[in-house]
Length: 336
Image (cartoon, rainbow, N blue to C red; front, side, top):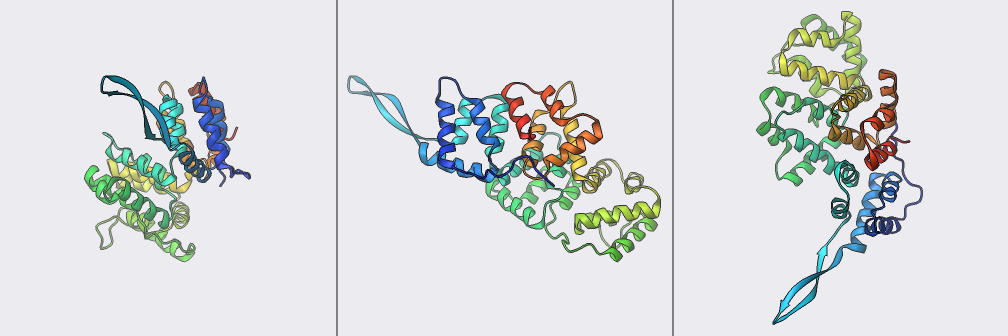
């Protein structure tokens, strides 16, 4: 897989910090310069620029009017300042949102997105699948640790607090940090595919969970892809048909979304982008979340999938749905 943001061969974080500060403090905010600095550096490099920005401009000298006796005098007051604060103060709208997202550490951004999804009025399983499918055991542990640090609550506790039991079972699959990560065992794939093709995907074998849920929780994503293929070969129909026949409502719909993402994550994300861009009301925060989070992972591949699936370039659709500097930043984030 390939992203659209690549490591800058020449990193001068101090100079980049100075350029950003100059962009904010000119007569007019130089958004073009800000966009160029963001796009030409990876997230890791942006963190170095943020650190230098705080070193250079961490204390801003402000003049405050104070009464001393009968006199009104101007007294210097020092205010802690960093790059994200200046972005908030000098930019606005969706341009500010995407800029702030690009300046967040990946784990911070992921944790914030998960928290927002958990506490929303109507949680959508697609968001959890989008953010968590494909993550290694190590990455899942890191996400849990960061979430706990940021929100002073275990992620699993937040899931139990905010979601109903059906959603909890789906999140337990996605948050598994004991997933088998060994090489795919072909004989095991065949035996498991034969078992669920004969007995049904919803059958229970001495556990509280249906067998398909147990497999989704324990097996590697590569193993599951092979399992779905073998099931299709044996039954002559995709595993989604079995899920539709044996599960209902929330669990059924959640499992279908999960299986779709496991089969082809880039195609799944392309469909999510199409959903975000669908007229008449584009869902900009969903668009920003996907483009920023995948920009260094597989956004180039997602663009290719989108073109194959919908017959139009993703960058053209994004351009039609956005405007101004926000459009420019997303257009460049897409590798144009």
